[in-house]
Figure: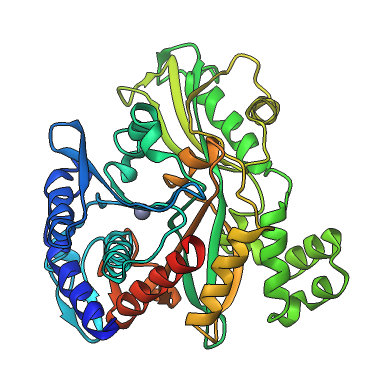
Length: 439
Ligand SMILES: [Zn+2]
C-alpha cells in the first residue's frame, strides 16, 4: 500500500467533503452521504443509504468477514454545527489547505475522522484483508441535534444492520498540552448523560410600584440561588480514576495518588491544587447544573405571577436520575416549585477498560505514535456512542488528531482545522486498528 498516495487522496477527498454544507439545523446530510457513496462505488464497495426525512440521510457500507466475531463499526456523523463566515480567517466551507492544516467546519468534529474511517475501509478492501468479522462504515445524520434522526433511528429500525461487537467513534483527541511534548490520547469509554429540567413557580402578580415579595421571580430567584450554590459532591468514577492515575505518572502534583492509589488522596490533591477551577475538569468529577434559560415577566411595571427556568444538568453514568431529582428538590427548598424532567438522554454504562478491545486500541496507538500516552476518559458532552452503549455494545471514542489547547477550542468555534499530517497518519492508524481487531 502506498500510504503517502492514499493519505494525499484522503486530504483532497476531505476538502471536497467539507465543501458540502451539512450544517445542522437543518442537516441536509443527503449530499454528504451521496458523496461518500461515490467514493465507495469507485472502489466497488456496496453501500445503502437510509433516509429518515427528506434531505436527512445516513450511509452504511460493509466489508464482509468470516463471521467469527460480530462486526466492528467505524462510526462518524455527516452533520456539523453552524459556522458564521464573517468570523473565520477562511470560508468555513472551503476546505482550504494552508499552513499545514486543512481548514473548515467539521475538520475535527468530525468529517476529518469520517474520511479517515472511509479511507481505512478503502485500504482494507484494496488489500483484500481476510477479515474474521465484518467492518462496517457508518456515517450518520443528526448527531449535532441529538442523533434521533440518525444513529438512534437506525438502531430502532434496522437493528440487524447495526449488530456489533464494538464501535469506534468520535470522543477523545490526542491532546498535546497535558504531558509536555507528547500526544495524550484520550480514549473515551464513557460519557455523562443529559438530564434536562424545567422548573416552574407560581407567585402573586401585582403592580410593580407595590412589591409584595411574593411575585414569581421573588420566589424563583432565591430558590435557584440556593440550588446553584450547593454543588454536587465529587464522585470520581472508575474511568476518571484510571485517567488520573495515568496522569499521575507525569504530573508531580498527582504523584502521591500514583503511589498509594487511594481515592481519598486523589480527592484531596484535586481540592488542594484547585483543579476543579478548570471547568473541563470540574465537569468530569461530579454531576453539574447549568441554569441556561429563565423566562418571566411581560412588562416593567407588572409583577409576574409565573416564572420558568431550564436547567442543563449533566449526570455521571453512575448517577440515578431519581436520586438527582431529590437533590434538586432539597437544594431548592421550595415545595411549591414544579420540577419536570423534560429530556432524559439515554443513560449508558461505561465501556470496559479492562479487556481485549481497550488493550488492542492502546497497542495500536503505541505502535503508530511511539511517544503517545494513552488513557480512558469520560466525555462531559454527548455523542452517538450512548445509543450503542445503552444496547450493550462497547464504544470507544478516539480521533487521532494531535491538538494543543488552542486548537481544541476551535471545535464548534471559529477557524476549526486539522493538521494535514494527522489526516494521513489517521488513515494508517484506523487501518492498523482494523487489522488488529478484525484479522
Ligand atoms: Zn461530533
